[in-house]
Length: 196
Image (spheres, rainbow, N blue to C red):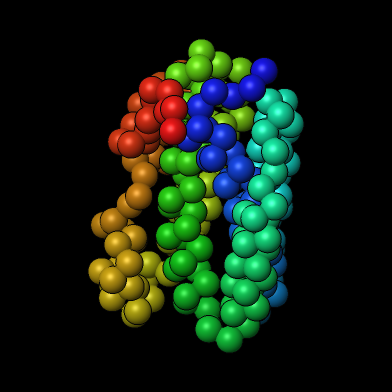
């Protein structure tokens, strides 16, 4: 069965390549850290991203969605460059920008769920829900690692992410169950099939 939803196909292909970029970035991030506990936590987050790539790849394979060679090359380069930069930009910026990135990633999986629902497909709800919540857990971890740093208020104002600025509406303190998660990330969700 082919997916007759251009936004969904684009989201799957982008997520597949971007998860590898994130994994490469976290390899560098973990390698640049001195604290063993922090290093282990970032390595676990890297493993989560590899798991997400595998899961997205399985969904793509099921519907015959081809991997984008362009996105693979682009995000391979981005991930490697970010990973290397972690060794020279200090401790704060890798944590801050990882948190901002993860904040945006949360809704990508819930939007995929909305797109699938527009096609009458609900079989992927559980895995998409789990990946969206996992990305939120990553965001919260990264935020906690930097929210008390002296540079944080300035970066929060400039980059519109932090304690007072979020890119998603998921609250881990009051997380909705799978059945209620359709309420998440409805802005620009594009629940109707996109023909472009």
